[in-house]
Structures are given as C-alpha cells and as structure tokens.
Image (cartoon, rainbow, N blue to C red):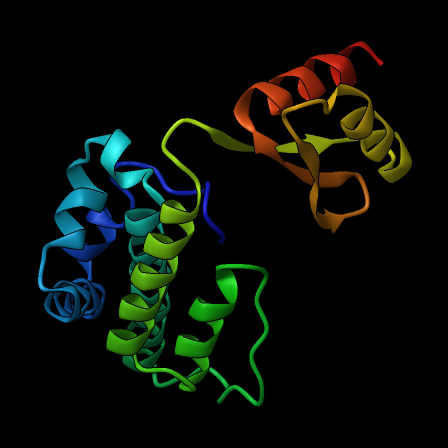
Amino acid sequence: PGQGSQSVGMGQTLAGASRAAAAVFDAADAALGEPISELAWTGPAERLDLTENAQPALVATSIAILEAVRDGLAAAGRTLPVPAFSAGHSMGQYTAMVAAGALSLADGVRLVRERGRLMQAAVPAGSGAMAAVLGAEDALVAEVCAQVSDSELVVPANYNSPGQIVIGGHAAAVDRALAELATR
C-alpha cells in the first residue's frame, strides 16, 4: 500500500505473533536509528502521518507481513515464488523493490525516510494538501481544478485508476475543488 493507508497499531499484533515479522521491525528500527515500530504501533497518529514517518513505517509493516507469510509457508514446507520483477505504485514501488530483493530492507526504509523528508520539506506545513477523488471523470476533475484555482493552485496530481484521481495543491484550493466536485 501507499502513503495514506497507515494507521496506529499497524503490524503490532503480527509482530507479537511472528518472530519473522518482529525481526523486520527490529531491522527497520536499527536502520533508521530510532524505533519506527513504536511509532507505528502506539503513535501518536499526527507523528505517524508525517510523510517522513509514514513511508518507512509502511515499508516495514508490508515487509513484516511478507516475512510472516514466508515463515508460515516454510513451516508447512512451502515457499513463495522468487520474484522475476517488481512493480509498485508511488511509494509502494519501494516496498516492491525490497520484496523482490532489489533493495535491502535497511536501504529501503532509509531511502523512503529521506524521500518523505524531502517531500515534506517541499511544502510548508499546513499549506499543501492532497485528496483522492472517487467516481469522477478525468475531464470533470481537471475542469473543476482549473475553475477553483486562482492565486492558490490545485491540479490533478495522479491518475491512480479509472474513477480515482488524486488532486493536490494549496490546501484551501483542494478544499474548494472537493466541495465543487461534491456538488457536481
């Protein structure tokens, strides 16, 4: 999953039940030099939701799930296929690269930590926003974004799939676009 799917408590129950999952969180904590697992498990949500924290926490949690599955299969005498390639959407591409063995877990969490830090630094706190628009046609979303943009900009930022478009820009303009899209 990508950023936005994080939630306080993610992976905690799994790490308590799976040594393989717990080892992933331990390795992620060591790579970052701080307990990202504690933040993922106990929050606060406001800190976990910061881009620089959400991204490594999601990579660690996703890989912990993968390792728990691998461990469970191994106990049953089975294995997952060896990946032939990796693919992921947005931040998920980094998890995919770790899962496929193209990046180590340590490099992956450090890389997305820096990616998140740079993304966060690019927009002053509270001035920018993103939102997923569901069920609207691409042309309508683009039209509404252009209509509500003035000195504050909002644009279609990512076409996730038919019927799911992420808009981004100045927070107030994103809010105006969402309100207008809701009326249409």
